[in-house]
Each structure stands twice: as structure tokens, then as C-alpha cells.
Image 1 (cartoon, rainbow, N blue to C red):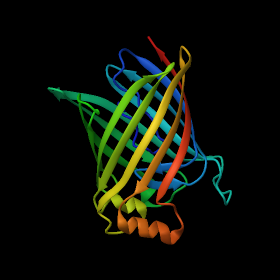
Image 2: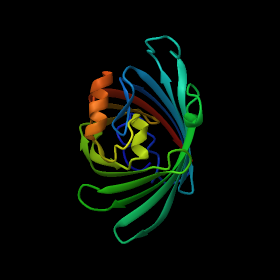
Image 3: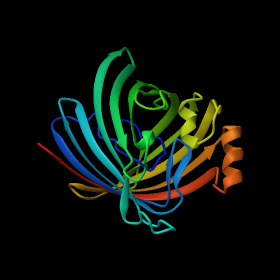
Image 4: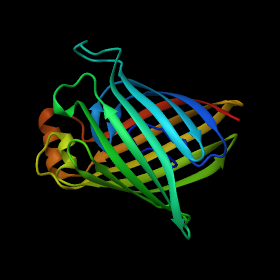
Length: 245
């Protein structure tokens, strides 16, 4: 997406690279946290495949539950996403990009078993690479989520270290993803470190450490009541295979 995915252990960054490219990523994550909300407290496997050409990237992504305590969905995919990223005209040091995202949840039922979002990012070519992303659910909840982040990349040893931090705000409709009504406000705070080490010309490993915290008071209280951690430290290891023309 051109920036580190917002601390969900769902990394699909495959934009701003020249020429036609194909990539396959495989991530193993100790938790699945999305916008601060905990979707799986245990180990998950997240593969994705992406294809880029003419600045447009199409990505197919999935999440597999590896440790369902009830055994109902262990070893099954409980989410499939399709994303189309596209560049937009920039203004001075500010670049813009957009995305259409569709997500389906095969182990869910009823109206919420699929949804879609339209996304818009603005990134500044400044110190800290400030980025603002606006996410609008156009299918189910019709909510809005706004993410503000800073990131930095630096060479370290034989690889590169990527650091990022951000905060997100959700309106009342978006924050219903937490199962809490009338919970508008600042939703989450995140910080992440990921290291890129090229093993072979087409293979890069990305070990990462992530911290996420729910900061919306009503959702934090709900998490406490149902026994879910509102603050989460989790880990990931991602293998990325890339080919270009």
C-alpha cells in the first residue's frame, strides 16, 4: 500500500515500484489485530499474492486461524480480502493514492459476512513521512476511519529497519466493529518495527514486533468485561517473494 499496513499484521505493501511485478507473501503472526481491535488472540497464517503494473496493484489476501480453542475453524480461512491500489495526482510535496477494498468472512453469517471500503491516502515528502488515510465503508456499516501515521526507514547492517507509529479515529458507525454502540472517538494507538533482510535475490524476510492499544474508553471497558486484552504486544515473521520484468 505504499506504507506499512496499520499494525494488523496484514502487510500488503506493494506500491511505488517500477515496472510490472508479481509478489507472494507469507506471514506468521502471533495475533491478528486490526485498527487496535483483536480479531484473533492466537497464532494466524496470512498469505497474499499481488500483481502490479502501470502503477496499479491488485492484491489477494487471506487469514487462517491456526489455534481455534473450540476446534470449529482451526486450519480454515476466516477472511479473504481483495484490494486494488491506484495512484492519484499529487500536489507539490504531497502525493495521493487510493484503494478499493473488498473483504469477505466465510465463517460469519448474516449481513456482516462481507463489506467494502474506499480508501484515500495523502503522504508528505517530509521528515517522518507523515501520512493521513481516510477509510469509508461503502457496503455495510458506512463508517469512517481516519489514520494518521509517521514512518522512517534506515539501513541497518545488511538490511533495512522500518519504524512506524500512528493513531486512528473512528466514527460511531465504524467503531461498531468492536461490538460496542455509540463509541465514536480516538480508537487506537500503534507502534511497529520491522526489519528487512534479503536472503536470496527474490526472497526477503521481515521479522517484526508490534504494539497496539485501544484508547477509546467504552471499547476498553467492554474488552475488560469480556476478557480481551486492550493492549497487545505481538510478533510476526513474513517471507516475501518478488519477481519483476
